[in-house]
Length: 332
Ligand code: NDP
Image (cartoon, rainbow, N blue to C red):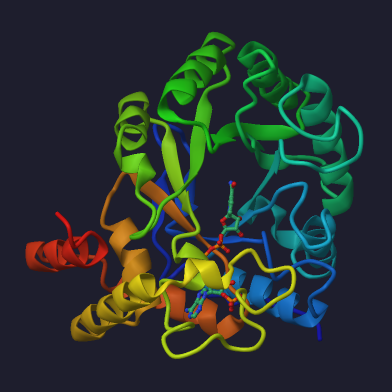
């Protein structure tokens, strides 16, 4: 069926400025790490992407290796861009990344100029795009001079293949250096993409403060801890869930009795707030204005719709905040 975008798509989404840049991102962005590759049903992936756009989600996050199979999430995005979203390119923020393993040999991963720029060309081809909006170094590479990696990001902008650049999974110390190097080249670091959720709090140690000081945006990935912070595993491990899939990146080891107990207590707390657990987990991130966007992954349109409902209530009482803390870290 041919697609016509919802004329009211900008009515209910909230847009937040990314650091000190001119760019705003939707409070909820959609990631294509899983559920959009060649092993999925294309129509389901397409429906999710189009429903997201209809709900005001303008930002779609990819990487060279997203699938499975690697590269095929970008192909799916490319197909949908061609068939349905062609006339909306200027309404979209498409990001991609390079750094994790993508092809054989010494240039297929990490942070060399060779890997980053060759990978970006491949990504553009797969997505049938002339440029991406954000190009990331996907992970730090301590064996390649940081000057070279940041220089490659700067070149991507200078060549017109990316509008902005970002870093992902860099610790605070390395982020500080990367941000300074990009500044010297007059190519500001727009954004840092880091894992952050009620369960995963490493950014709170020093990265959040650094990014705030440097006015670089933080986009939080795996906000639902890959599905743990939802009702998905409250009673069992459903067929087709990430934990149940052969190529899934969650295992039963991630669901200890202790973790399950925390999930159930958090679920009770969410219900008492009048939200589902996934809504509360996303709202919990959005309560902090330093988080410019929350990058969710979904396997269905229903999950996406539910996650967007989190925007209706992002405030927490101090009592709720303390209760969440006590559940997550009963020792404190
Ligand atoms: P989430 O923590 O949002 O987990 C997504 C999974 O949670 C879904 O696949 C689904 O599981 C489940 N889920 C989502 N919504 C609901 C709901 N309402 N009810 C029940 N279950 C739900 O994020 P991801 O781990 O998928 O990461 C999101 C994005 O972040 C990625 O697509 C990618 O763009 C980015 N990312 C970046 C990384 C990096 O290194 N820079 C690393 C990892 C992610 P199910 O499939 O079982 O239905």
